[in-house]
Image (cartoon, rainbow, N blue to C red; front, side):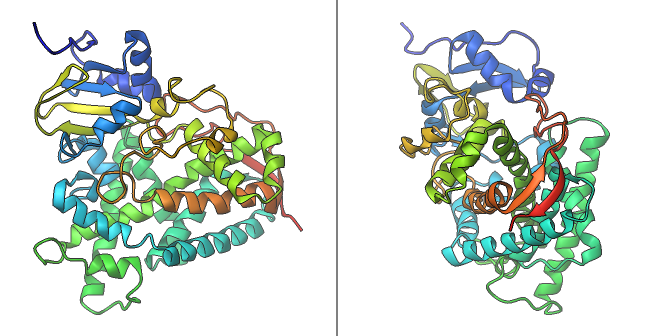
Length: 419
């Protein structure tokens, strides 16, 4: 008798278009219909495995079983990730590059980030008070772009901020779309990589002097495992891997505003200034609302898990959104309830909005701490430090478009600093 089980299989030649059409729900829909946390399908013309849940996340982040090199499709590399970035590395090369990112997550650096974020929010609220209406998504992107550049030590002229903001946003807004919008994202990445690359060259040539503690300086002079400086193109990609994700926090900022608006009882609790409750509120925003739909890896070598056979080089997707809404993990998973995090045990595999596993040894997003610090400041302003009206508008959001944002992009009116 065979010691392996037959994996549930989706019939058909290819389901790439279904994945694009169904977005965040593609894997979850089939996990439900198959009554299984794992199934086989075909994506990009090849066999693929999709899975979700805590146990699946734990095996997915086992670096002995999965690798990241060549896992991301070319369209994502050309827009979202860039070539030869940390996301596509494995083993010692990944560990060494990841250490470069983790070295900037010190308490001093995060405190610096918080201070910059507060100043940018203060300036924004002042500006918004003079505007008839504020489109929060676009304004938050600019706040985040200014914050990211200042924190990273990337000098940008005032008249270049809006264009840079638009380019960085295009990188994550275009990865899952087809047609002109996708090519806009490719062009945006090419433009920003060229600009950052020229800046790196000027730093290395001594034509631009930066403090040694700036992120841009550290990355420019980082050495690989062989002791060589990274090539200019790779440094540019990694600098963008700081800027782009911070601009993407604008998505969470929109959902913070949505949660504050839709759950007034929770907003009342935020007025107490209880930092623990604010933390729980933000964790629930990250769990409840869609951000990343899934992550990809390739099977490193043949292995069997829970009776299912995984063959070398098979594309495997882990359902992030579905795991964060898994009824086996989360009671009343479809309800917004920050209090659930008072009892959460802190597993790195059940709450995975930005990936799971270990920060230092694995592929969990290095910027998760950055995300939380920026969100804390943003929540304080949206809940406690400003008054505003949210007029009638379409605040619904799609579970099929990736990334998902409220359709109106959250319009604010009559914005005033609270005294």
